[in-house]
Image (cartoon, rainbow, N blue to C red):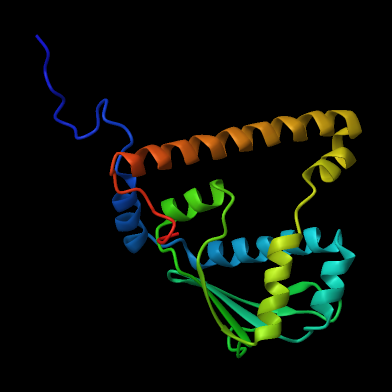
Length: 196
């Protein structure tokens, strides 16, 4: 005799995780020390990537002393451009020359956008030239994972690992794209291009 599960998730995948993450995100906040440490590490990583691109640091050096405020939901970071064309965390009271607010509030939808290889919708306020330079960085600067791996494990293994990583990332992008297309075709309420 077949019985139906009392749980709303059974064979009917995908789970409606979006609302669950939204509710959790409203009530759960990471401790301030963790947010501070993540911001610090993100700036260090961004500088590591920028130092591999002389054109990027030269472009940013023109904006030295400028402050960008990046916001998403209840989180924000103030980033200052150094004379060397790198990033540093600005003082909490520093007045931003540019404010970038990520419009997508759902962490799940934001992850989907990233997996598709798209940029999230961002509201931009402030200095136009500074915004243009930041946009150029987003469009042109990429982390060379293979070069960093080669320093640790050698050229051939790094090349093999990077190729495998690219294949996995492409398969993941196709999977997400196919799922989104299937949901849209079925009228399942998937995010449309106008929402992303």
